[in-house]
Image 1 (cartoon, helix red, strand yellow):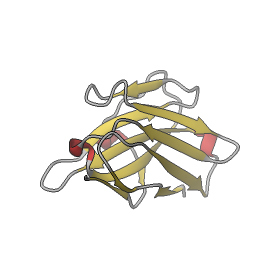
Image 2 (tube, rainbow, N blue to C red):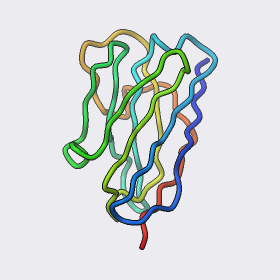
Image 3 (cartoon, one colour):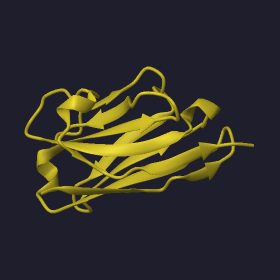
Length: 125
């Protein structure tokens, strides 16, 4: 059973940067597509980005140009680099995993089988 643990969240001023990490254990990490999602208070969970086994990526329009997803299979870790943070980026960020090969990943929560507990990102001056 794949397990995911997010880290790297925190309090950042607008315009600042963070790098979130999603570390996996319990199964062969390289066989999974990984997605990042976020949920702000009172809002539905939103897809942010995803990365396939072959490093194909996708981003939500709201984060394109500011967020970068990457993976290091040797470390069983996926990263989400967040630059130029905005107040609307404040949320709990979750990573999720989808087993099996996909040519293109989709940031649709219902297609992911394994979820982490989340890490809080707060943007405040």
